[in-house]
Image: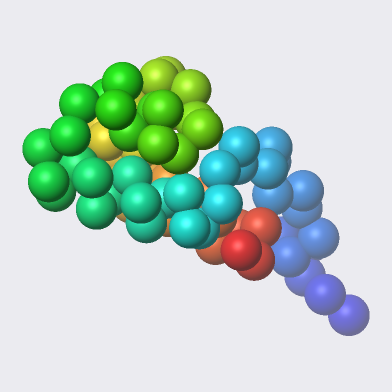
Length: 67
């Protein structure tokens, strides 16, 4: 039997894939602008800002959904 914690809904699915997250991280390391990253990945600017602000949370969000 699974624990009640394991049965909890993991929240809203992230609006990005692992490949998009990796590309955002790579481009941030190369000092690309948020607009350039958004255009290259197809993500919204707010999404890029969220990933830039807290990359660990972005990674954890993907991990919760098994991506």
